[in-house]
Image 1: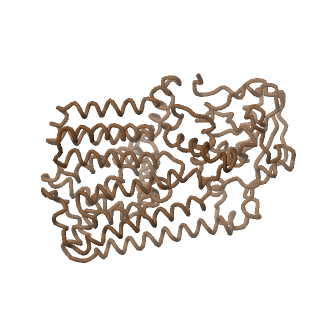
Image 2: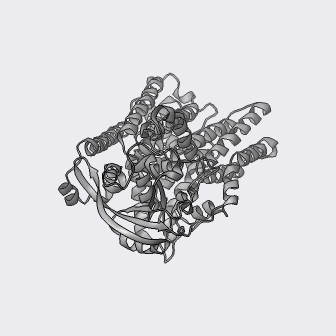
Image 3: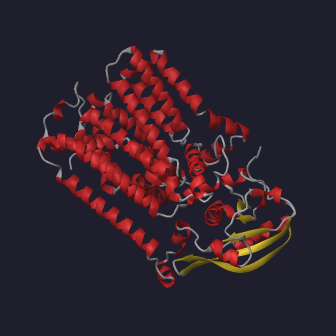
Length: 541
């Protein structure tokens, strides 16, 4: 498909008026958004929580101004839903219920992004944008339903982009424009409370405004008042970091830092990962359309160039991380790609307008993407309801993937049968519950998910992340504690914990199950008489 630079006329939607394709775009986009919402609700009920989701539930046992890994918004949503749902479900709130705010937040994101695209380039462009957004695996599954910061982030960034679009490319009275600026400051602050990625959005927006005639708007007080509002809204993150010696900022700024020259395999993984998360055709076509926009000087101060400025900083920066030896995760770039999808939608709609018929290649790729996504969903359903045998898991090398992707079923009941864990009736106060210790935040997240309110889970290790800011292990001084972990490094880690106990007694392994099969056997030990807590790697105030 040949991409043409989107042209921004005085009335950007005039070229679309009267077209049957355009009139059909509204109803089709509404159907896509509603279908996407229903599919994500189904996935929210079907999928086991991922590691990050299990972690989010585990570390939201109390309200905090912020958290070690990320700003607080996603954690606040989880904590709020737990408190709302606990009168109906008890302390062990179903994952579907916890995911509901994230599912509906992404539906709102889809509506906002359609509105932005439709307002500039018509409903057909909005339809193609929504299709690309809804069929991207990352947005459909992770940002669209999981308990991760990306859902709140893309919601508030999309709202901010829509407000800035109205400010920069519409004629308004000074009073109306000032109100829009203040609203943009609020939504940008909420994005800053969601994920540190919001800073790159600010960089892109500021660069675009300063580099174009729109910089004259900075002569008014409203943009600066908006910046002050954004700073005030994000102040909980700053306050928490001040109280904890900037530990979250230091942790995030150290990620992706490498040495020893370019990491070419990491670069390849980053590029391939983005293609998988977004869809290969969507990535290539969106990139081609964006390059076309930036190649036409007359469009460089228009809406498409503005969206490119919002999206490219995170795409370029995080893709380039392996070039200085780091290793970037492919989902880091996804909030940037969000703002390139309207440019893609506009490019496809332009081709359709010239041909007076749907774009065959785009339609074909959309059908193919939907088919692949449907097959992936079926595969997940099969694993959930018809799990493979232990021999098949071993033959296909799926054990590590399944251990990290599925709930550790059977662990709590098997521990209770051995007398190592209380019966399902939980103790009402956390200090009276058994203390279970893991050696990594990943295993602690799975243990906290599997054991629920029947135990308090903490980490003895050098990377406890948010578990370091929960209960203090010193509160269990003089008591026995339970160590549980995966077999690989359990013995070595147990040796590091030994000085903090009178002695440590190894126990027989306990089965973690998948269906009627054993997925793996967790190692278990009892630490007798906790003498001192493990030294925390982060400051605790």
